[in-house]
Image (cartoon, rainbow, N blue to C red; front, side, top):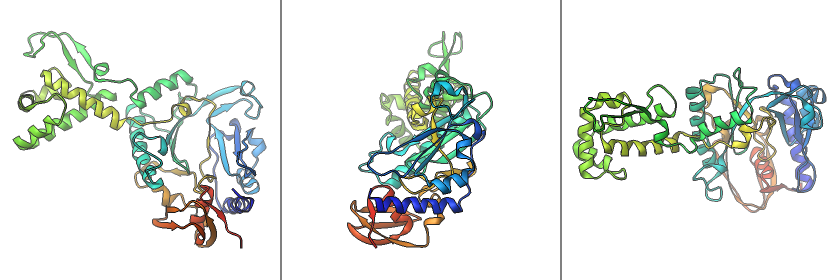
Length: 391
């Protein structure tokens, strides 16, 4: 990045902070603070181990320093400004989850547009929130668009702050459905005389909560879907699963009718092929409803995380706090564009041409000098795709 571009971005970031209202997290005086300034050269310099006293007035600090990136610690400390972690005196830490769009399964950053990656990440965010709220019952959640590649979720329910790395790792394993299969979810009970194919053992899925309920709900949805189809379509639907041939599909259609009550109570022993079906539905459930969170972020009790309300120096977009009931409709390429950067045009010199999608429009950046809306130019410069043109 050329010095002219760096100076322009730093100046406009300062203008934004002069207009913006940025709120600190809970207990800001117990947290470590850090930021990355607009230093020259190809590398970056992290200024950290700062206390709330060093920051002083947050909005004044942001307007004065005009940082490229701003962070605060998930952890809280006796002495957050101490120069080493061992001297800080750890008290506890928020439980933080991070989803990165370019780390999602099936997403190739070289083949997928920025907007498409963020849309995929939004779907994973909804899965994550479902697990945190439904399976764990967490209530004190703060959802944040990172301003860059994805989303953060901060959980601050009582009793979580003192969880150690091992406890947090167990939560990660659950969210990822790591090494999970159907057998791990089944409850076993010895029975007799129930008219089952295996009268000595009944294996059931939980119908009340957790991954067992998720798998069971999807099984019931499949059963109901098949029962609503005509015979040919029902057979075709069932035969789409591995190991289910024409004969097995026909038998399963009958099993769905005769054993509906048993199935709804979680019994997977109603027929051998039903268990085959259940295993595949379970695998689909784990794959589609787990959330590919970044494990080190959640297990790190000293993590620095982006400050909501600050600007992301790699995009010029806002690190946006999102109300829970607005998550589904949130569009980062519209809602996270700072108003400060709208209404004017600037000249940029593009060296990495291509498209930019912002505020509902698609802009084609051609190689060389051109005039673009300022928010497009700032995005392109922050992403390293353009330099500020000479006036």
